[in-house]
Structures are given as structure tokens and as C-alpha cells.
Amino acid sequence: MAWLNDELSPKSGKPKNTFGGWGATLVDSLDTLWIMGLKDEFEEAVAAAASIDFSPDSTSDGIINMFETTIRYLGGLLSAYDLTECKDRRLLDKAVEVGDMIYASFDTKNRMPVTRWSPYKAMKGISQYPAERGIIAEVASSSMELTRLSQLTGDMRWFDAIQRITNVLDEQQNKTYLPGLWPVGCSPLSSEFAGDSTFTLGSMADSAYEYLPKMYALLGGTDAAFQYARLYSHAMNTAMEYLFFRPLVPDNADILVSGQTRAQRPSSASLETEGQHLTCYLGGTLALGGRLLSNKTHVEVGRKLTDGCIWTYRNTPTGLMPELFRMQACSSPSSCELDNQQWESDHGQRHPGFTHITDGNYRLRPEAIESIFYLYRITGDPKLQDVAWEMFQAVEKHTRTDLAHAVLKDVMDPDLGTEDSMESFWFGETLKYFYLIFSDPSLISLDEFVFNTEAHPFRIPRP
Image (cartoon, rainbow, N blue to C red; front, side, top):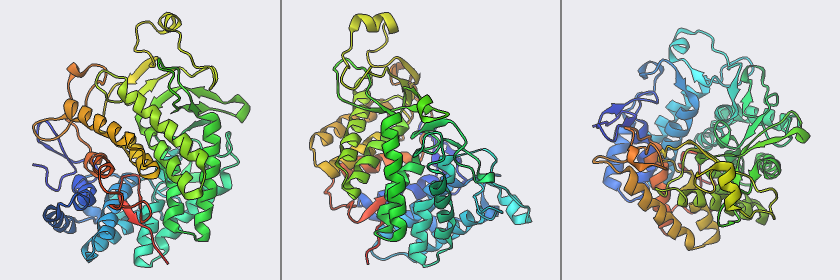
């Protein structure tokens, strides 16, 4: 129905092109097929991927989102190449093709990337410029993919391109209004990453932080690896002080949620207690970073953040987590008893624990099961498998269509039904993590592989 289109509409069966028209779901699903042992389907999909024309004049879009192109297409091709024993050269050749396109977006005066890149202008030789206003996640989240491409090809130009960005982040990490964290807003045009006042580890910032410990793993003991370890440790220590909060919930659960802070200086930091499904990746990131750097505190905080996401899933009528929601922070970590009468006085009949559901969608996102997977692999706690199965049953119950799975409109009211939407990360990430948590830990071992933000595992080089 949607073969070689970007997405399948799960209710109507219609194809949809959202990321260049290059078959995003197919490329995002290559490694999932291989991991699940669907080798015949994998070979068919590889043959189709090898036929994709990634040249600038092939896209159905006038403007290319380079972040999405990097994590989905380049990440998917590199992972499929890394996983297979035969090392199918067609996959690496296609990865180089995509990598060359991405590299062209760095062809600017200050070598900062054009995050919304025009193939037409590139073909016509028209200069393109980095954005005057950008977001940190899009500028600083291509490090893993370009590094792995350099490792596999021996061509260091891709690594050099992203290392320039890392060096700028390093130079400015202590110059921001919350030293240790970079704000959401940045100016690639002027290489400015310290001037904005909004700080979050969620939407528009997430993968910039996620990639810090993962780059440490991917670079495996080199001098460059320790730069990423230092950036990660400083960022997370600041986040623990200014972004994470314990919410007031009926069962007095010892959980954490990551919010958002606005600050013109550390002493003026103002916490906004809005949680996001997207920030659920943090539990896994901290657990992985703590494991890599022998930091037990990070593993423990990662578990509390993951437990916060589990609590949020379990405490809606559907057993699914909303996209955006607000909670009330405890007055202090040790004073967290919910007074039901006071709650009703302050918040009416809203579900205890949530002061407001900003966006009730469940978009088939992977971040919660991702962190549950990491915590299970790192701690071995079998209760996490029970949680994963409970979550999967809720997803299946409320999102299944005749063809596939669809976005649930409101986790608080399942009678509102579903939307005709299913992004490629459902196959590339969510189903993969659900599968891996019930698989033998030797399958995609965390000692041998590191996942990009689209759940594409890259093999960690060994001397």
C-alpha cells in the first residue's frame, strides 16, 4: 500500500510522504527486520533500499529536514550494514550517498549546518546559510551517524564536520544562564549557543544531550571520547539541580519527572512542571551514562525518572501516557504527602497526580519503553519486563487498526478514537524495544552496540 513511500496511513491505507519521499518507514525498519529474524523480508527491503535515489533532484520535498534525514535514513542504513554478517556493500554505498548530501549542508562560512536545506538551491549553486534562530537538537544531533560513517569508510570529513559543533558547545557550556546546560534556542548563523533563557531536556533539545554518553561509547576510549563524557556529566548534574522534580501523587511514589526551566541566571531559575513523553528517554540515558562512567547516582536517578514515566502510563484510563501534561512539584523531596481535600480544592475533580493534560495524544512513541529496556539490561530487574508487557497490551488494545496501529487522540478518553497517522519510529523504535526487552541480552548487547536516537544500533569499534 505504501511501499517506498515514507509512511502508511494506518486507517485509510493511503501512502504519505513526510521525509523526502525516500521510504522512511522502510529504511527505519531494516534493522528491526534483521533483529526479529525476518531475514527474507530483510533481504527484500535491502534490495528496495538500494534502489532509492538520494540525489538532490529526487526528493518530493522542496526543503529537506537534515536532522530527520540523518537519524532515520543515514542511521537506518548504517545500522543495517553494521548488523549483517555479509556487510552488504549496497547499504554502505547508500549511506555514503546520504552522508554526502548531509555534508553539503555544512558548506557555509562558519561550517554550521543548514538544518532546512534546499536541494534546488544546491543544484543551482545558490548559497545557503545557517538559520539565525535554530534549536539545539537539530544542530547538535548528527554526531553519532557522521562519526560512524567516518569509522566505516575511513573518511574523516564527516567526523570533522560534527566535531566543530562539539567544540563550540564545549566552549560555551559554562557561558549559558544555567552553566552546564545549553538553552533550546540557538543561532547557528552566529555560532551562538548560550543566549536563550529556556532550558529543557525534552522537545527541541533531547537528542543533543542523549548523544553525549553515546558518543563516549562509540568513540571507545579515544581522547575525543572523554570530551563527550565531561560534557555529559556537567549537563546531567545541572539538570538534576534545576530540571528534575518529584511530583505530588496519591501513592507518594518516589519518582522523578523532568520539567522546563527559564533563567537569566542560576538564582532566577523558575521551574515549569510540565512533563513530556519525549523526556522519558532520560532514564535510559542516565542509566547508560552511569554504567559507562561508573556513576551509581546517575543509574539511580535514571531509575526514578523511568519510574515516573511508568507511573504516568499506569495512572490514565487507557494505561497510556499523554504527550504533554502538568503535575505539582512536592514542596521538598522529603515532604510529599498528597492531601486529597486540598487537591480537590486546588484542582477540582482532575485525576490525582495531573493538574492539567496539555496534549492527550499517545503518538506510538518509544521513549518510555526505551528507558525500561535500558534499565532492564543494566539492572536485570525482572519487574521491568512485567511493566513492558502491561504497556504493550495497553498499546495493542487502544491503537490497533485493521492494517496497523494509529495515534490515540486522548489517553484520558479512548472513545474519541484514533488519528490516521503512524510515524516510522513505531517500527524503527517502539516495536524494536518491546521485542528486545524480552530477548536474550546477547541480542544487540550494550557491550557491543550503541543506539542512535532512532534506535538504530551501531557497532562499537574495538581495537
